[in-house]
Length: 338
Ligand code: ARG
Image 1: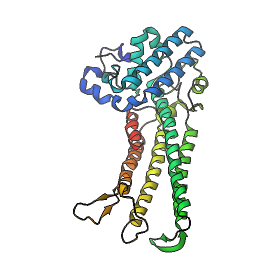
Image 2: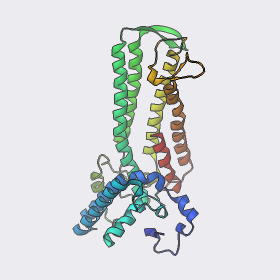
Image 3: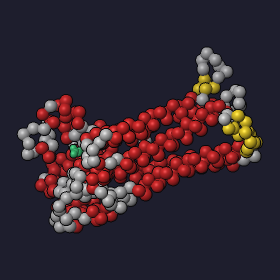
Image 4: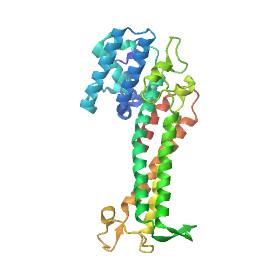
C-alpha cells in the first residue's frame, strides 16, 4: 500500500486496516476536483516562491509536474494509476503522484498548507465553474419562456388564486412570470459567485507562522480573489456549498411548480395546452392517454435536491468551530444536487 505522506512519522495509521482505509476515503466523490486542486496548488506554490519559500527551480519543477499530472488525468480519467484509495482523497493522490514524479520539491508544496484549506478552495473553484454553467442554463430557460410569451402574448386565459378563476390575463403574462423566476434564480447564483472568499493560507485552522502572502495566492485564483477574513471560519464552514444547494433547491422548486401547472393545463379537463408527443408517454392499456411523464419527473426529482440541502444543513449543525471530518460529506450532497 502507498504510504500517506503525512503518516511517514507514525508506525501506522488508518491504512493498517483496509476497512478503515475505505471508510475514510472520499476519492470516489472528490476525483472530479482534480483540475481545481491542481490550479490551487499552482497558486499556492507561486505564492511560496513569491515570499522566498521556494526557489524558482523548485517552483518550475512543481508547476511542470502538476501540469503533467493534469494532462495524464485528462487523458486517463478514472484509470489514472495515481488514484489510490489508501491515499484517501484527490489532494493526497495528486501530491503523492507529484512526489513520485519530481522527488523532494514535491514535498515542499505542502509548506504552510493543510488539506483543510485545500479542500475548501477546491470546492469554491468547483462552485465558481459550475455557476458559470448554471448561469447559461437559467438564462436559456428564461429566454425560452420569453420567446413563448412572444408567441402567445395575445391569447386570453384566466389566472387563478386559490385555484379559483381570478382575473383575465394573456398567456404571455404567465410565460413571463416563469421567465422572471428563472432570471432571478440565475441572479441568485451570480450573487453567490460574488461572495466567494479565498481560503488559501488559512491552513488547518489558524493560518501559519510562515510569511505567507494570502492576497498574492488569492490573486492567482481565477475569480476568487477576495481573501476569507477568518481562517477558522474559512476551514470550518461550508456556507458557499449550502448557498449553492439552496440556489439549486430554488431552481428545482420553480421547475416543479411550473411542471405542476402545465400538468394541470394539459389535462383533458383544462385542455389549455397540448404537450408534444415527444414529451409524453402512452399507455398500452388506455390508448387515449398521453401521460406528461417528463413534467412529472421534473417535479419528482425536486425532492432529491431538497434532500441534499437538508443533509448539508444537518451535517453542519452540530459541529464545533474548526474542521471536523463530517465536512468531507459535503461533496456528495452538492454534486448530487447539481
Ligand atoms: N478529504 C477531506 C475532506 O474532503 C480532506 C480534509 C482532511 N483533513 C483532515 N484534517 N483530516 O474534507
